[in-house]
Image 1: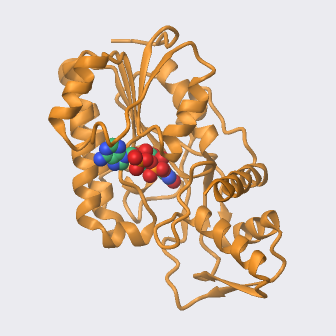
Image 2: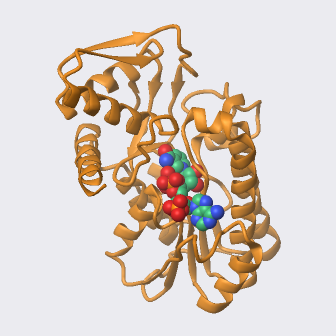
Length: 316
Ligand SMILES: NC(=O)c1ccc[n+]([C@@H]2O[C@H](COP(=O)([O-])OP(=O)(O)OC[C@H]3O[C@@H](n4cnc5c(N)ncnc54)[C@H](OP(=O)(O)O)[C@@H]3O)[C@@H](O)[C@H]2O)c1
């Protein structure tokens, strides 16, 4: 059944994970829409608790759900907290998607991730490469949980005709990122390290790997805009990648971050550390056909992210 365009105006909208990087960007973006925003603190409702989730849905009747709550982290967190990554992400997806079905939510958007695609899938990564090969072992538990969420959305669409959709963002950065020294993603990790090196007057910073791999980075405010666009205009079972469609070497990216934070010292590349996959870029042609393109240029986005980092430091 064609359910687009979906009328978002006037709806009560639950952003699950509203304090996270993606959730807070969705909240900022939704301020431009005429909606009633619903959020809940995890101290009040732990989304792993099925009874608490059901009770909350029964009491608040959201009409739209953005599922941006998840246990998320960089390569070290994914590889070491493997049990937590599979359990938390499986159960959060199962509880929220099922509650949305039971309580008659009109539209739900589930956030997957580009790491659900097979490790050796052809680049740029197309949506139809899902489940065509083995996953990257370091984040397999996370990816399996996310794939289960994707398949739940597909299954509920098929069996119950639920208007639920799946989107797969590339690597994100921006306000609200996690700057944990061990558990952060690459962008936040580099911002923090170059900032600290500048403040300490360090003359060199070492970046893991050769600097040659190519990666794609999307500003989280662009992601939020794409999610709202798709929520309003898209209703189908196919996944939709969300990215810029452009990649950059880690070496060039490190130099961009260094110049943005004002670090003028030397950058070394530690080739004894693993490089990971040589290239990771999403095919965004489906997204382009659906009428959306990234707007925030990378240098501008990194500047915004650094300003947000400085504000969060000042507030801490
Ligand atoms: N970051 C990226 O580069 C990236 C890339 C692709 C896809 N994504 C996807 O985007 C989504 C959000 O990622 P993010 O980067 O925004 O992560 P994040 O900053 O870590 O935020 C995750 C949010 O989920 C909440 N949460 C986690 N466990 C919970 C629980 N048991 N009960 C209630 N709330 C819980 C957290 O609450 P607290 O704040 O209370 O801890 C937080 O608000 C994820 O599905 C992720 O896969 C992210």
